[in-house]
Every structure is written in structure tokens, then in C-alpha cells.
Image (spheres, rainbow, N blue to C red):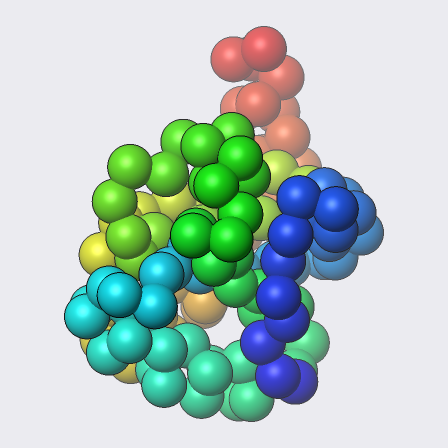
Amino acid sequence: MATIDLTAENFESHVKGDDILFVDFWASWCGPCRQFAPTYEAASEAHPDITFGSVNTEEQQELSAAAGISSIPTLMAFRDGILVFAQPGALPPAGLDQVITAVKGLDMDEVRAQVAQQG
């Protein structure tokens, strides 16, 4: 599955509607973002069961601000509508694979219980 463009209009529906959603916040002028892009695209093709989206921070400034993006690239992962991973910096392929495996392996009942305790 190819990477989809996320905007202020469709971001929330993907967060709530997709089982697992990875989001890459990037900009065209960002060297590390351009280096990470092929790794991210390859992961999207290798994991068709996951939705991979990207947010162009230049075009989606309000969305980026709402997500608290202070440096790019930043990778976020949502599972069942819950933010379960957020980290700035480009990951190497093996690092991205580790994050994907960890997110897939989460016990979401446990995660929801932790979220409820914090709320």
C-alpha cells in the first residue's frame, strides 16, 4: 500500500478509523526527511495491513502545530485511535521494523487500561 497524504480534513478519520496508522511529519527542504522517505515507503509496501500516512508540515501547519511537532522528521504511530509512539528523527530500516513489530505486538487492553489510569 502506498503512503497516503494526511491533511487537517482527513487526519482524525484515519486516526479513529484505521487499526494501525503510522504518520511521518516531513518537509521538502528537510534533508533527513528526504533520506527517511524511501525507508518509510518500503515499509508501507512491506506491511499492507498498516496504513502509512504522511503530513507535509509546510502545507499542514495547523495540523503539525496541533500534533506538537517541533522537529522533523517525526514519526507517530496510532493503534485503535490511541497514540502509542512518537519520536523525532529518521529511523534506519531496522529501527522502523522494530517499531512496527512493537506496535503490532501491543496488548491494547493493557494500553487502554493505562490510558484510563492517566485520564
